[in-house]
Amino acid sequence: MTRPARVPRLPEGLVLGPDFFARDTLQVARDLIGKLLVRGDRWGRLVEVEAYRGPDDLAAHSSRGLTPRTRVMYGPPGHAYVYLVYGMHHCLNFVCRPEGMPEAILVRALEPGPGVGRCSGPGLVCRALDVDRSLNGAPLVAPELYVLDDGYRPAAVHQAPRIGVDYSGDWKDRPWRFLMESPHLSKRLPKTAPRR
DNA sequence: GTCACGATTTGT
DNA sequence: CAAATCGTGACG
Image (tube, rainbow, N blue to C red):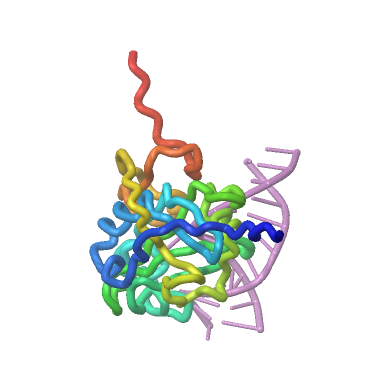
């Protein structure tokens, strides 16, 4: 008798569509914390994301206006914006707001699902889930790449300044990094001030 | 065409 | 702290 092959069981839940991503980008970022990012038969839970609000936000790629690279950011919500940084790492974003408003959310860290490697950092997320620029502009739909609400709700969502945007003047101080407590964050939660 | 630089990661 | 490594955007 043949034993049934061990098929990877996918989590169940609701796939988040364009309506979810068309809302205010900061609200979407907050709401994304605790959701599942699914890539084929691999997944991880979103524990850290960052909001980028163009074209005013000098930390956002869209602050330079519509260019070949930022075209996807200007496109419809619920699509992937994937780019290459430092010539070697990919970064995955979710396009937010209605078409014409170039805003997006960067995926910074996941709590890895079964068999998934370390996901603490934007480049590592893409490496672990095999995300590259072939997915740039792709709609967030099953089974390729999508976000799932499995009913999990984080106890608290924290905010902190964004990482690696020191070039953006005052915009670097905006607390547009959203995260939940997790051992899988790309950077530790800002320590509470020591009592003295 | 040329050039400076980056929404990072890793090793010293 | 510094290297790796190449696409992008600015300039001309």
